[in-house]
Length: 357
Ligand code: E4P
Ligand code: PEP
Image 1: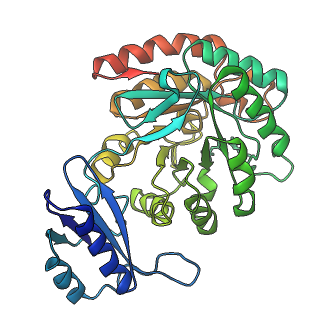
Image 2: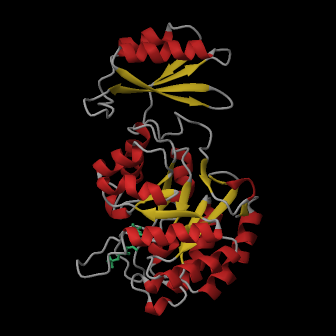
Image 3: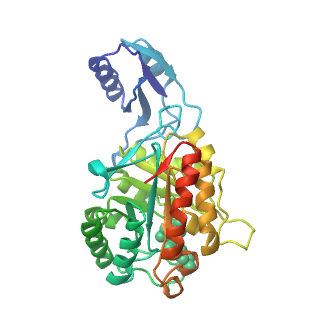
């Protein structure tokens, strides 16, 4: 349920609605847009502080809300996800990330500029990380990616340097001014990863790890939530809803390819995700063409296609020597390939009235 306030409503009117909801055991989520103020109504708050069921809101509550001062309308949200829906928040959400390498010190994801995030799949050594960071920064990337906690299909595969890797990422931030995005895999690591990261990444394998989603939702850090490898848009948006419903509004969706019968690529990049998610949701949408293809030779074309289709940002794996990478070398592009890609991205973005930073 969404309460739409009249354009003439005051802060006191909004507060009145919020207090009414609280008194009825409901939680109110405020969204103050340029055009209008709306309050999303979620079910009763459970003992752990998590929002309760959405189904149990008594219709008479809706009628009572309609009678409160300066309430314009009370609308039922047709989708199972509420706070993630366009109905709740008609304007695009812009997630702000502190990044010292840009003018003003803030990168905005979800606005007119397409944001480039690049770096190694995995932090391997200081030299590998610094070489990559220097190169991608030189070409214009403003956010540095690098995994310190790595999911691995095989328990014998490389699983990352852990906190040591996070320290190296923080060192790269100090040196190049880029913000850091890195994966967090378990609720108990969230506080520690927050000390180093500017953006928390939830990987495809953890899209439905609800305890982890709750925990990152309790922070106020920007969170990238990757699409589960077999997830529908609805399941993915409901996963985002977990984070939003804990009060963290800084959520970015990441299309990274889905499992299909096709074997020529590691995953099948779902380009329809960009325009469709923009219709369903107000959240920014990021593209990961590296995981999406698994093939260095087509990361460039899929990056261009993602921007043309409406992606707000790109997450590209770059390695100084991909053939020797400890993880995902086949999908990591070389530094010269990255150098070649950037002007092409500028051209495609320019053609649709956007620019790349
Ligand atoms: C991401 O970088 C993951 O850690 C990686 O793609 C996992 O690959 P694997 O499934 O081959 O271990
Ligand atoms: C990654 O980007 O490091 C990663 C593990 O990706 P995904 O979760 O999409 O496989």
